[in-house]
Amino acid sequence: MIKAIKNYLKKKVIHLYENRVGTYFFKQKGYCPCCDNKVSFVAKNPWLRDYFLCNSCNSIPRERALMHTIEITYPQWRDLAIHESSPGERGHSLKLKEEGKNYLESQYFLGNKKGDVVNGIAHIDLEDQSFDDQSFDLVITSDVMEHIYEPDKAFKEIYRTLKPGGAHIFSVPIINKHKPTQRWANKGLDGLPEFLFEPEWHGNPVDEKGSPVTMHWGFDIVDFITQHTGAECNIEYINDLSLGIQAEYIEIIVQRKPLHEKS
Ligand SMILES: [Zn+2]
Image (tube, rainbow, N blue to C red; front, side, top):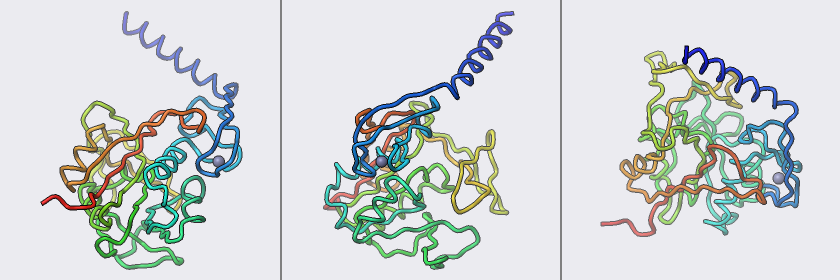
């Protein structure tokens, strides 16, 4: 009986939530870190993570959080060697591409091999990269690290390509929060994901099938990275409406290579 009431209330709440979509409207004036303009941030859907848009450049909160973090940790970023894996075509990616003097983008093109270049863009598997050691000051990824089958290899490889004093700055949904990280899928022998739980896919601009979610990260992601790479890690959580940075799951992680290796 109690279960039936609970279920009824749960449905009612979901229904109320869904009904808000379409009538929901939120607007905030502020300054956009991605397009460097005084703008309005507007949401017509309460899921701010994907719908709280800059009215000038269409960026979303995690892109603004990433750009703001780059700006405050490496204000000289325009002069640095930057590798961005799987960039989008707006937000921080566009800004880094347009204003960075030494910016290199890569994509993971399914079915290609190490060293391939597709339409002028390097095919890079983050787990096994063709870059030399210490090639970059900054490596940028944005909602990529939840799609990697062997994240320990990817974090190690990224770290290897960083110059001393450099950093991998990235967004990743930490959906497990204080619960331990869970592996969500393994790579099957046919290269397709074998999900351990409910299959989950996210949109991928270079693959219409999407990208399988392989990890549900918790805040212990920083321990995972430090354990596998020796990097110094911290999580930046920004909640600043004046920068249009407010939403669920927009933590930015900084995986830093010390200037002097500990001996
Ligand atoms: Zn903007």
